[in-house]
View 1: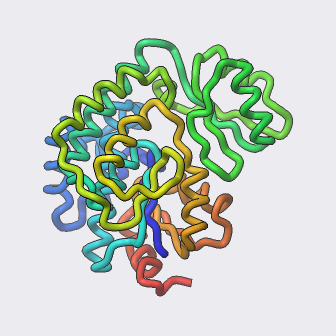
View 2 (view 1 turned 90 degrees about the horizontal axis):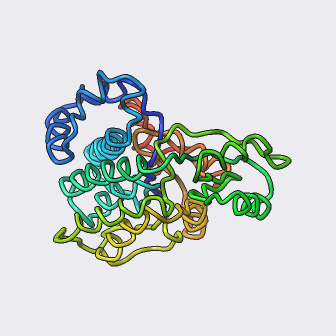
Length: 306
């Protein structure tokens, strides 16, 4: 079983879309996505600096668009779909497209709204996120509760992302638990927590009237790592996920239970294959960062890779 993983964050660096624009049809694809998301993806993916493309309003559409571009390129080269798909955080929008639940145009419209709404919600209070690496999970969770922080991402492989007030995050970093490292993340606010309530409401309004088909391949949800077989339910979970924890640890456990034989992370890749090396030991992975990685991904997809 080959699974596609659609990132919620990755190695998006200035100019990271430039090599993709050399492929036939990608400029037209990105132009259409730009119109749907109300973000100039070509300009931001080729010319904007690092600070600009970290802006939530821009980062989220860029990430989803890049995954869709890579996914289409893989389909064109291989002639086949993966056996299953999942997305981390905003990557769930790309996963819904990859599984046939919603159209690419709807996904790009929704991610534009999601990015703007989450940026607006983050601006209401000074909050942030920090990755906690290592340590005993129960002890980490107890410490977060003590500080009034929320475990926003259970990423597996010994990584939990804490979210909440900046002073609480500072206290966590100042006195880390034994055996842990705390790394502040460059994000606008406490995503996947109750701080995002207004963004949930905005996205729920936006999905009304969106046609949702049932998935045509296996689709896992960040909600609890379970398989979703109903398109309308998948869309509901996507909305709720904005203010609830990402359970990528449970997604990886479900991949393993399903007998995964390879994982391909779509652009901008790197974060999820890194987690897989710890959470899915021994499973071959390919991170599709540029078109140069497509051949290796196709080989894995077609069962030709070691």
